[in-house]
Length: 174
Image (cartoon, rainbow, N blue to C red):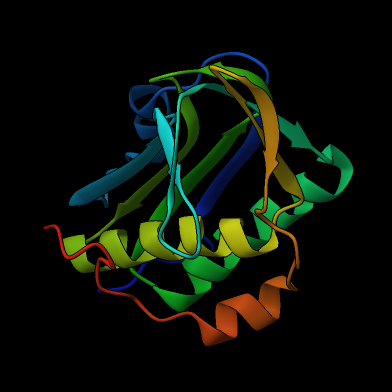
């Protein structure tokens, strides 16, 4: 079963705390049989691309190029809605500014007719955001701060979306 028309898309970059519950209220429609929400939270460490671990993170400050980030978030959500026609609504919300340890930095919520489309669309959205959105992370830690090498090579949304495949958990932890 597919939806009729384009899915409802809500995107935002905000300076206040975000919650999965707030995002879920934006995506539940009468045609939804599944809602999947991903909430990215600030943790006390970073795993580097080489596998090394940087401990002592206390907060992350997100520097966002809003003028370009908002249209990118919208394009990502719209592509997800086009790719999984069962998707009814998508909310994609990212924080700007300082987010404390345990605080939500990004929320993706997808309402769809069935769970598979909701899971895949949510994973697609967060994966493509990380590859394409002009959002940078400055870790605030026990011994000062440091910029994290994220979005160093910001990709075009069409390129990132075209090469996206659901990936297994690289940690091997289920």
